[in-house]
Amino acid sequence: MAAEETRIDGPAGARERADAACARLGEAAVPVQDLFRDHWLELVRLALVMVGDLATAEDVVQDAFEQLHRGRHGLRKQASGLAYVRSCVLNGCRSVRRRAAAARKYSPRLAEAPGAGSPDAIAAVDDSGAVIAALQSLSRRQREAVVLRYYADLDAAEIAGTMGITPGAVRTTLSRALATLARTLGED
Image (cartoon, rainbow, N blue to C red):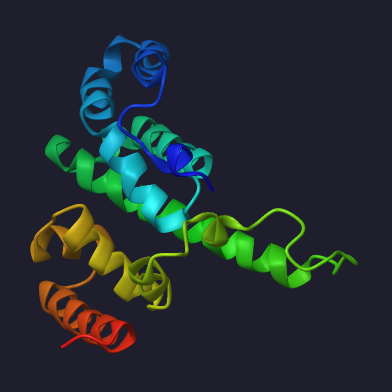
């Protein structure tokens, strides 16, 4: 994937798409609109790190906001909307990865030259970086914890709320993930 395709500093027309999507939500969804405007780009970046494809990342985030809009009356606290959407994004990324793995497993093997064909979502990420390759080798839980901590800059309590685990489990998972990354990358 080309570097300009993975760069997300506000793709052309992103603000217009966000405004159009908010307009479709209606007046009753003003908090959802504000959440969408304020956090869309951050959540797309998070999803991009998890799935490796910009279009898929945008779809996952859009689906998460649709789920929030449908279930916003069921939220215990209106302030927990961002945590809910973040959890929906992680769950959507898990589903995308699971579907991609199942598709690879059950798709017929075509007689092609090696390297021909379209890369899957993980291969679409620029694999040349050793850190990205090491991150992809972590377990799902470890990878999610590392991305939420060091990419989304969340603290242990926020990560625990997003992943549905205890803060102690977050710290343990991060510690083990960092040890694995250090071994993989050959650092102290």
